Image (tube, rainbow, N blue to C red; front, side):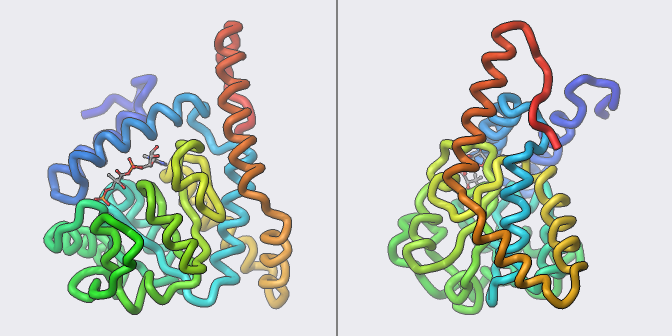
Length: 261
Ligand code: PTJ
């Protein structure tokens, strides 16, 4: 049992969720490594949602609300950490949800679908229906549902590995990711990159979507305006400068959080 007074309590809690996910067959061993890499970047960022992450979250909210066929792609780590929020996001944005795994087995896909259904999602794609293929992708991620990722105009791919984002973009889809590593290929290839921990970013994303929708009739217009001003390259540069500034500060003996919102 974790002691909430432990200085690394929140971080340890997430580790426990990932390990638990592994024991239940939802997360793969490689997912533990991916989580560790995320932890490291989170440490460098300062373990908070920053101003540049919030700007990307707002753009992502706007992109969801102006998409005509949004699809949320879920892998093992995402299901273990934020299944409840994934379901809420899907309902709030009328998105379809598709299980899409790098280390794909039908058994694990089913387990992940069950987790999402337990959170109240009626329909989960990416199981037996994953009969279409995106030929440019060389991993098992190429198997997609003709009703889901194949048809989508916007695909949300949090905690993603390498080449899929590039392939999805070549197919003309808008891609949003959440990735603590601003240097990853996915982070650099996506249209919108939220450099934040998925457990902090998801509730903020849902909140921003609700805020924009609450504007009423003209909300799509407002969302389009947010998107027209958004520049992902600039967000990634700000993420790298933020890390660099934090390291400079720490090297000078000032270990304090900066840029948190
Ligand atoms: O469940 P599967 O089979 O689809 O496999 C999922 C993993 C995550 C194992 C697979 O997609 C993979 O190997 O991913 P990578 O290449 O390690 O990339 C995952 C990215 O997510 C890395 O850049 C990490 O820094 C980042 N990351 C890890 N945990 C978090 C995170 N970003 C945000 N929040 C996190 N909690």
